[in-house]
Length: 216
Image (cartoon, rainbow, N blue to C red; front, top):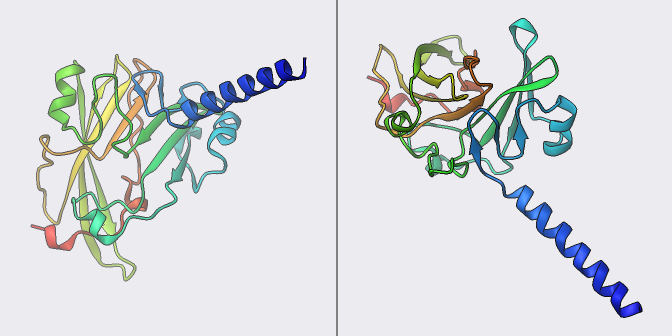
């Protein structure tokens, strides 16, 4: 009897271990539904129980709350020579009426069922998700001395009906054209038939430095 009980508890422990492991390593992007363990419609409290306290909180217009979680490891300078200049991998969640309305990630570990990620280009994504609504967006960056810095030019491609969007961009001092053939900056999921919420900061809070050597 005791041996059966041990086997039972061992099996239960193994199931819980596998379930937690699968949950922790879920890097799926499902348009219109979720990225990883964060699902559209989750409450803010549920997200906090899953990801713990956010690293940054911003209150935007129309009552939207933007919260971000950063990876534990900060990228070295050698890591950011790709031109994206992120300091960390991150997930950003937008809450409307205390529920998840949008999720965005920059890590290439998150992929769709067809292996699309931020490593793929906007053209690669557009082949699978149509029709698209494109929005051009510019964010000016200033250094601590008050001098103008590199401008961040971005394009949001949004498959509104499918509930997925992606962003690519370029840095410059004039008006360079973002390259749709290069890797993406972020991938975004949102509610189907509701347009993407534009990041008012452009993600500059996660940028290591203005890429001066790339200015034209």
